[in-house]
Structure formats: structure tokens, C-alpha cells
Amino acid sequence: MKKSMSLLLAATALCGCGGNSYTLRGTITPGRTDSVFLHSIEKRDEPRLAAAAVDQQGTFVIKGRIEKPEIVVLNDRYYEPIATIFLEPGEIRLTTGPMGQIAVTGTPSNDAYTPVSDSLQMMQGQFLSALESGDMSRVDSLDRVAHDIIRRAMEHNTDNQAGIFFFSNLFPEMEPDEARATLERFSGKHADHFLLGRIRQAIDAMENTRIGAPYMEIELRDTADEQLALSSLIGPGKWVLIDFWATWCGPCRGEIPHLKQAFEEFGPKGFTIYGVSLDNDREGWKNFVAEQRMEWPNVIGIENGQSAPAVEAYGIRSIPANFLISPEGKIVASGLRGDDLRAKLAELIR
Image (cartoon, rainbow, N blue to C red; front, top):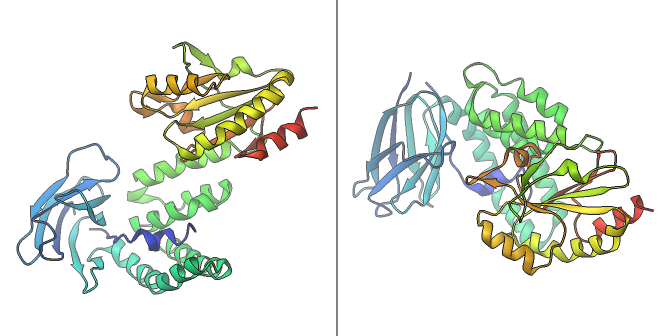
């Protein structure tokens, strides 16, 4: 899916800023739910922030105070999302259109977002039609238009949450230097916004994992419950593929035959794999590794239900993901899928 249009297809409604008190007045489709709840996006595991009853006409009111602006999700009683909202001081209004479309207005960030949302909504039908017909030229053209709309909106809103939201959608397409320069433009009261923190961490990972960068140490527990350091596998004549995967990941499982082939062919020539699993079920992972005869070193990258710091340092946001490390300890390739891994090894290992 094209990244710029993800804003459009996510179908979220956003809102904006003002003192520490806020009032959210809303009208949703009558009968959908008898209550609504606000949940933080930043702190997903915490209890709901606020709740309100919904009357027979579908109206509700939530009042409260916040320490700082944040992004929240308004859920119904079945925990189905109704809208994503920029929770900020002031009067926030949520309305439902005749076709069920949600609009959130009344605060600065949302007012900045509204014209962008309108423009993208006008393109939605064209984009979906082009996708269904396989007209990728048209898809690319629409995506470029959407990208330009979002970029202009970001550049004009570096003082509010809408701009931060736009930036969070755009930065993966930027080079690290551009992304960091853009990050520096967001300052003032939103400088410590959690999304900017995540972006900063992701930019660090982009720089740390560029081709030519030195590998970063990983030391995790292996299938024998012993600590195994990545550095113990790297040295003269040795090539190591750091492979981030999980048993529950279909594409990851699809890569196993290719990994086996590469390991069997190039293992005698100094190649090995340092498999980092993102499984939560340690015993299930160990059994899977044994059943699949994945005979290279395997460690698990989940600690106390959270990704290990090393996983975060490599900027892993989706799997499978991998990095090929040279005997000198440099990253020489990444994202080697299918036959690409064998081809790269044949090129490097003589």
C-alpha cells in the first residue's frame, strides 16, 4: 500500500489544541453503542482515560483535564474504534455525516488537519478504483499528489499535533539527514511529544543500520537458555546474517527454506545466521526451531513481554528483516529475501 495514501485509507478523524481543560461533545449513529471510552495511543496498556454514556440520539459529552496534548482513540463499548482524536484543551466537537463519516473540529490542530482530510477524501474513490483495476501508473500519480498535500501541510504546522501526525507518515520515506532536519523544526510545547520521540528513535536506527555502518552488539538467550553475543560469531572469514523473525509470521516462515539453503551451501565457507525471534512463547519457539531443524544460532528478542533494546536499536518495525555483517563487522546488505540472500553470498564469498 502506498504510504502517503495511508492517511486516507486509515479513515481516522483528528483533532487539535488550547488551558488544561477539554470538553468533547459528540454525535454518533444512534444505537451504535450506549457508552464511549477514550484510550491513549501512547500508553495502550493503561486503563481508559475517560468515559461517557451515549443517549438515544447518539450524543455524548466527555469533560476532563490533561497534563499535555496527546492522541487518543474514541472506542465504543465493544472496543471498536470510532475516531482518533487529538485531545487538547478547548471545545472539541465530533459529528457523524449521513454516510457515517466522522468529523472532529474545534481546536487548532484539527482545524489544520481538516482541509488535508477533505482533499484526500476527494481522491479516495479514484485511488481505490486505480488499485482495483491494476492501474499502477495512476496509483503512483495519485500517491505523489497525496504526498505533496501532506508534506505542505506538515511544513505549515510544525507547532501543533497535526503537523507531528503528518511527519510521522512522511519520515519513513526521507533520508536520515532530511528526517533529522525536519525533526528539529518541531519545538516548543510539543517538543517532547511521544510521536516525535518514536520518530527520533527510528531515525537513529536508520543511521545505525545504513550500509557501511558497524554492527551493534546483541546479546540474548539462546535455545539452551544461555547468553549468546552476536560478537562471538563475527571475525575474520566469517559472514553473519542477523535475521529478525517470529514463528507467528507467515512471510518469516516462508523464508526458512531459503535460509536453510544458504546455510547449507555457504556455512562451510564461513557463513552463519544469528536468528532473533520476536516470539512471546519461549517454549513454542524452541520447539519450532527444533522441528524445523534451524541449526544455526537462535536467540529470543522478547524480554518481559517487550522487545529487547537491541531490537529497538535496529529499528525493527516489521518482519522478516535482516542485515548481513561482513568479517570486518560492517553492514554490507539488508532486506535479503528469497533468492537474493544466496545471490549476495555468492557475490561476496569466493
